[in-house]
Length: 224
Ligand code: FPP
Image 1: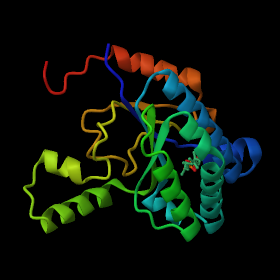
Image 2: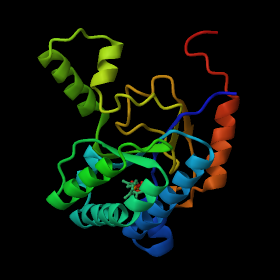
Image 3: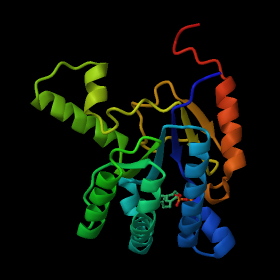
Image 4: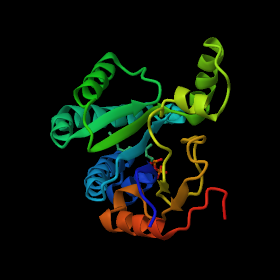
């Protein structure tokens, strides 16, 4: 059975779910946050050490201002109301992406990361204003500046995911088969699962099914 340390998720389908059931894309995001909470709980039950969630891409700024504002209000409320609970549960929160939000959000993020820094049970990497191509370019710029040798190990060290093992599983919900600029370097040998359900409808049973299937896969990493 394959060990499972790291699950990465592209949480797609909030907008469609919200429009279909609540006549509002934003309500889809609100429901999506409930799924996030379910999946965190289930990750702990499955003894997963790293959970990386794609919450906002560098491309998501193109969305209507109202939707972007709603997403950041959700994030703000989430951090304000849940960080102590996450801390009590020994969960670490780390943000990957460029942290150039409003002063209030930047401060909340800093505080949340600091508060939970030493927690060991589960690390949640929240990808916010994240884009894999920029992440790679920035890493190369730093490597050049510091005059380091370019090799796989160095690049790994200069990415925002340094000290995080590559994902074992990548899940994308929402019945779309693309990677949307997410962890492109890190998923070279990741097992990818495309799930038809929209993110707010995705649940513990779906998650456990994917984990069970993953554990049975013969992972060769290029060997036979
Ligand atoms: C993609 O669905 C989802 C997002 C861009 C936002 C994800 C946000 C959440 C799950 C809630 C917030 C989470 C935290 C931790 C605060 P989409 O809107 O692209 O859906 P669509 O493809 O149906 O339009």
